[in-house]
Image 1 (cartoon, rainbow, N blue to C red):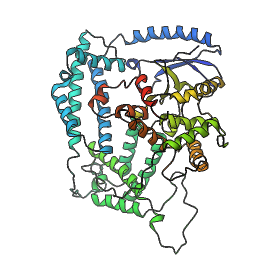
Image 2 (cartoon, one colour):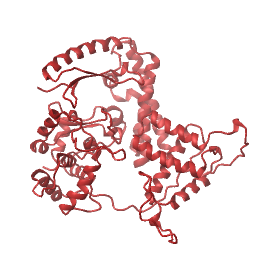
Image 3 (tube, rainbow, N blue to C red):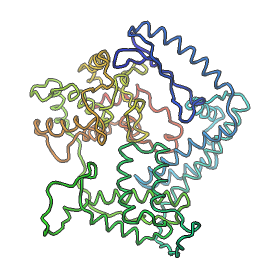
Length: 527
């Protein structure tokens, strides 16, 4: 008997009932779901009880949302929705470059036509209904409130398109002007502005409020900002900063000695006192640029929020010739790996996590930590197809980007190898994690030991050790194989969790591809 989505099994084999609250009645700081113990280990009894609770929950939720939405609430949710798209648009431009001429033209047309550019009134209604369903809004078609929502959606969409065009145009030119430093009178509160330390605190607080950072990312940024505050002086008025101060920070970074910033100690191989400093002792150019980009993000935010007139770190990143990027495994290498993982003729596989963690990497292209933090409940059937639900639903889970939340079909060969039986055994044993042998590391998540075993044992013993081949290369391999098999760029991105681009994909194709489409594509790889 297959358990419905609202039943979960704890590690003590006790069934729990989980009921997600509709967004329309969720409140800030309050849990988004109700979770209660059913006090039973009997699956049939749990199913009967949970069905009754789900029925009652639906009745109560419907009553709670019958009040509808106010005009202000409609505008608020639309503002939040399109603000998120603008944020993603900026990130995409900063990552891959400006929009194409065709992309800008499409935005301008949408800015002029709004929902009228989507075709018939039925098409516009379909878009509005999709948004309402996605956000579980208490708005019904045919009511006055529905007409108000459509009108506001049209205005918000036009405004988004106009802002996106404006955002793209920001990258058309460069700004090299310097700031004329004004004397600051000491002892006068009205002229103290905001200090470097206070600016950093406000920026970090806002990033945390928006849940833009994981705990690991916050630690890394705080360490980088601590160095910035040390060089610029934490109490200094930000209005006195100039591009020269940006260059000063850059110079300090290029001369900074290497340390293990993650653990807070210096390397054991210390130099002799009279030794001459070399580039090997200082930060790598890539690390210097990582700091500068973090500082540039801080000051860009400060400029946008009216704290400063310019970004003193814009354009200060060092151009350098990058090393050869990681490459994909060959088909022969993948075949040898799969055979060893399945047959274990060399005795290299000593744990289930080593076998199934690596096979999942091969046959899904998922990131190491995405695989390592899977739970038994994340393996489920959708439209009759077994899939991995890669999500952040459980405590301790973190994904790299919003696009990383996705459904990935289980490859037919994984099913052939007995993956579903392995999942069932883990579920029956009451483990919270699918690869329950893996332990958590605050800097590297759950995937550290699996990555080490793959890179330092499996590849070495199979004679595949190469500095350009690591666990992440399995991801490169999946992308390569999909594209070479004629799979579209959109479906490839959906499988590996890359962000989709363009107004059509970002705004209107929010439901994504069907599992049937994805499994047809993924089945073409590693057959």
